[in-house]
Image (tube, rainbow, N blue to C red; front, side):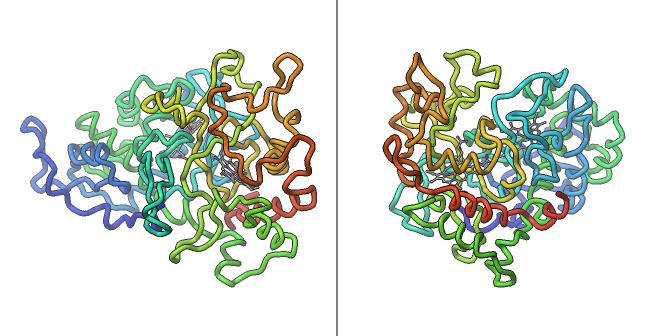
Length: 427
Ligand code: HEC
Ligand code: HEC
């Protein structure tokens, strides 16, 4: 895991290797190099390098434009949907309601496959890698697949990730990014684009697309909006605030390897001076139940297998990766009303109960095949060996769960201390 946010200043260094622009394209006397993308992914870098602007866009100006674009419904074919429709600023850019997945598409009636993740605390997601070695712990240990955006890590940057909703038929439903740019060029935002990127920002569709995606990306790197570290738990870590006895007990259970053991996948402590994001951006199969309310799940042959497909296509042959999804942050999770990649559970109490009683009371979570409980019912039998069985999981049918009702209540109380101060006020 990366320890510090990618500094934006470093992202704006000149790029010597940028190819000269084609002669046919009008170029200003001293073309400003496009900033390299914050994550440094090669594809995004080349994309930016090929699309220079006549004005060097400043970070504050792009942040401001990106913030406006984020709530701009003209980005969608329906004219009714913006990024904020699914990523509500008031919930830490998570879903605005308790639906498992949000509605989208040209008529706002398509039901997607996955819950909208919150977008805060993603600033240190490393690019996806199958093998991750962490120099901060033990660089000889392979931590397995890590990083990338989306529940299956298939996008390498927020820049790549923003293309997906713009053109997904479940979401903003545009035929391509160029058509969004054409609409923006005719609309009320055009003047702002020119002010930020120069008068020729819409001279080519690529340049317009770069300006759009870059503004959204830079906005999502804004510390105030996306990683304020202002929760009560942060105050506690800074020794500027205290937690109640119940919250402290919840924290202890969260960290206890024999009880919650949550910390093994959702790190909670300061490491090398960096505040915890409650995810290591790794991937695990935890056997989340099938969500029978999703239309896709009407087809018994359909399974969302995360890393091994079908939304992600490059790892289809890796059977050992079927059922693995990226560990989400738990910051601001208390503001969500749909949990896990398919939004199947709707309260933190249920999530906790699932963790501790998945194996001891499977009938509570899973459907039936014939008259037998179909344990791990969203994963075909041949992949069930991928499922994590360490605490808080495990325990024979009927055995006591790793956490009792009171302990669950305390862990939930602790999780509620992870809500950022501005969102606490907005509730
Ligand atoms: C219709 C709902 C919807 C809309 C509109 C939408 N998103 Fe999303 N967003 C999602 C879902 C669902 C996912 C998870 C996708 C997956 O895992 O396959 C997601 C994932 C993301 C992620 C990756 C988060 C992570 O944890 O890795 C980012 C970043 C993101 N969206 C940004 C945006 C931006 C920017 C826009 C506007 C251009 C937008 N989204 C519009 C539903 C939406
Ligand atoms: C083996 C690693 C692992 C352990 C241990 C673990 N988690 Fe998770 N957690 C995950 C993964 C992976 C997901 C996403 C799974 C999915 O959607 O398929 C997740 C999802 C969640 C979510 C849903 C968040 C959201 O945005 O939908 C919550 C809440 C959560 N975990 C809390 C906890 C708590 C509390 C504990 C301890 C009792 C815990 N986790 C232990 C890996 C783990």
